[in-house]
Image (cartoon, rainbow, N blue to C red; front, side, top):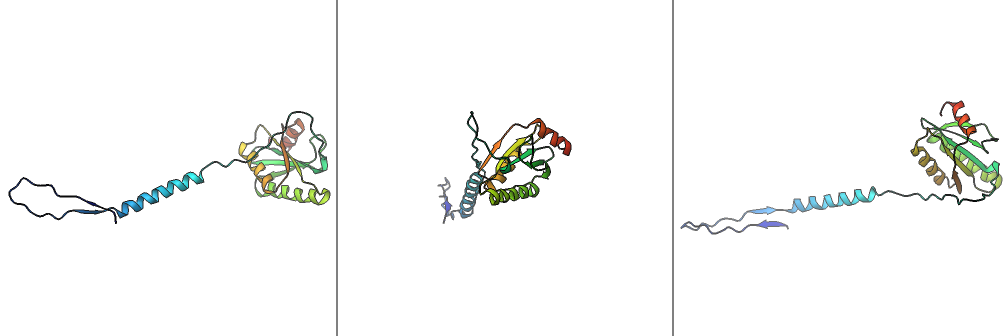
Length: 172
């Protein structure tokens, strides 16, 4: 298949001997080259960053969102968060502590279905990261909102009332 043939050169001696040319089979090298090329193509395709769309609100007057369809998630330290329904000044439910992963995902899923059954509209989520939260937790929360098909959410500054809720749970 792929081989390297070398022709013997003329020797300056008086007797001409016939030499058998050395044959090097390069099939294994070609196979290895294709494997390496395939490996590097696949790894570069798989490591491309995936971008999630994030729409930020336009400055100006904002529309009124009903508090019964609003869930507030405050991100704390140690991969923990609190969530409640309503606004910080007057929450409709008591703030509940949840770990990232199954606990917070289950809470969001339950509230999405509850609000949709009650109002026929989607849930509005306000995400408030604290100074002690990790950026990855914000990304995981937004990713979970996309998984649950939450139509609208906002990232807001944390209020002093929310900091009080986080401190009372020991996660600020």
